[in-house]
Length: 254
Image: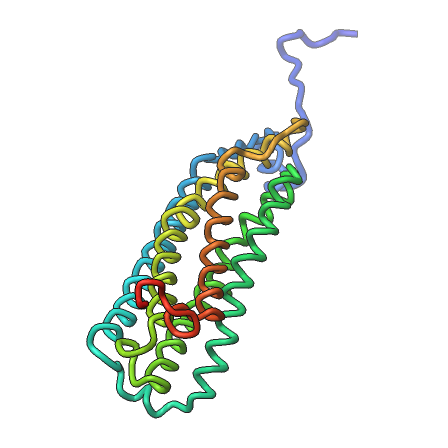
């Protein structure tokens, strides 16, 4: 039989059943996996700590100046504000006792806890403690100290007519409180941020599997500041109990 020439043979492929199918075949692409790279800025956390400590120090500075001005006005100018004369003595007394116990007990208790935490050399415990220290200061120590100083001034106004005419031991107590606030702000508050960053670095090394970690030196050094703060508390309560110049006369008054 006569076969057609090869160049006259046409090979036809079947058409797709629909235009949609044709588009599907022509537009189908293989999606390639996309790698997502997360960049973590290690300095951001440290910057946040620095900023938060700056804000905290600013507010504490305003508080310290305000409460010191309140004490100095009452010490040199007389009772202020005069409305404090209308408050019952028992209200000031109860507030003074509660505020003093929370303030003194808070300082001594946190000193003991922080010493135990530093001795543990446990990164998890250290990280938890230094993350909560500012909250303890803001919720217990500062409000209790404020209540104690305001109510103590009120007691001196109601009992003696004013802080400026109160017995010597009252003025000694307030001057000791001002000295304590200066020491606390200069040695404790200023090292909290540095200690927290050192503990955070220690915790990161712990998470990376490093063993044999020791407590950062800045944390260990804070114990001296805390112990001195406790001595301020003991001096305050010794003034309250012994009342030098009143129950126990000063030697130079003889």
